[in-house]
Length: 422
Ligand code: FA5
Ligand code: MG
Image (cartoon, rainbow, N blue to C red):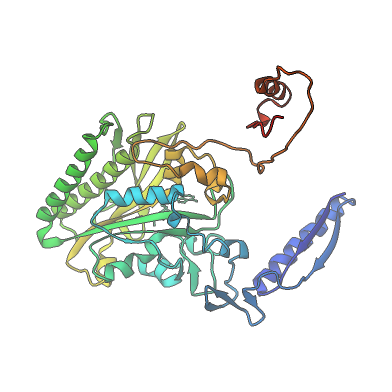
C-alpha cells in the first residue's frame, strides 16, 4: 500500500484551487486502486514563514501583496539568494568572469534584483499582451504587477537610460519549465549590449574592431593559438521575415551587424580555445520583440545543435524610450549553463545547484590555459567506514588488503587508507 501524506498551507485562492485539484486526482486514484489510501488533507502550521495571513509575502525585507496571479513557490523563492554567478570557483562564476574579460571596457551589472515589474520584463520590450511567455504557466508571478525576471533583457531599458553605451548584465532568470538534465526553472543569462553614435558609426566600429582583433591576437600568441579550423556557418540573409528596421540606414546597420557577429564569434572561439573537439558554430534567424533583425547562435555538441544565445539589432523604440535616439546598437542574451555544460563537461543542469564539495571543489584550480573537466561522482553522499582486524601474518602488505576489497566491492570503494598498524 502506498501511503501518501501531503502538507499544505493555504494562502491564496490559486493555491487553494491547486490543492483541491491535486486532492481530487488522488481521490480518483483511490477509486482506481482501492489499496491506495489518501490519509489526510491537513493544514499544518505555517511552513512558509514569509507568507503571512494578510496575503503578503516578505522577500529580503520588502513586502509584496499577493493576488490571484501569485504562483511563486517557496522552493523557487529559496533559490533567490544563491547567486551562483557570484560564488567564487563556481563554474558559472568562472564563465562569467571569462566573458567579462572578452569585453574589458564594458560596465558590468551582476547584482540587479531578479524581482522586476511586468512592465520591465515584457511591456517595455514590446511584448504583445497575448505573448505566451506572459502566461502563468510559463512565468513566475509575485502578483499581477511584479514577477521574477524571465530574462536579463528586463534591465535593458533601465541601463540604456543611464547613458551606458556598452554593458553586460548577469543574473538568475526564472521560467516555469519541466525538470530534467537540461532544463531547470532557474538558469543564468548574460545580457550584452553596445550602442554607437549613428553619425560617427564607421569610425567607432572600426576602432572597436581593431581593438577586438588585437585582443584575439594576444590570445593567438599564447601557447595554444586560437584555432582557425573552428567552423562558423552563417547562411542567414536579411529578408522581410527578419527585416532591418525601416529607420536604420542599410550601411550603418551593416556595420553594427558585423560588429555583433564578430564580437560573439570571437567570444565563443576564445572560450573554447582549449576544447578538445573542433568547434562548430552556426547562426540562424530568430524573432524577439525587442530586436530586428534577430538571430540565435548554436554550437554543435554531442551530435546536436545547442542554442546558446539570442541576439539582434536593438529596436529603435527601446533606445528612443531610453533617451538614446541618436544611437544604433546590438544586444545579446547568452545562456550561461548551456555554455558551462559544454565547457566543463557537466552532464546535468541540476549539478550547478549542488552544495556537495565533490562538485564545488572540482573548479577551485581553474586557470585559463587548462580546461577542467567535471569528474562524475555518486549521487549518494560519501560514506566512510573504519575496519580493524588482527592478523598473524607478519608479511602483511596494504596492497593485499586492497586487492581483497577490489575483488569484493569493485569500484564502489573509492579510497582505502591505512589508519594504523601496530
Ligand atoms: C532570451 O531570453 C532573450 N532575452 C535573448 C536576447 C537578448 C535576444 C538580447 C535579443 C537581444 P531565449 O529565451 O532564447 O532569449 O534565451 C536566451 C538563451 O538562454 C538561450 O539561447 C539559451 O542558451 C538560454 N536558455 C533559454 N531557456 C533555457 C532553459 N530552460 N535552460 C537553460 N538555458 C536556457
Ligand atoms: Mg531561444
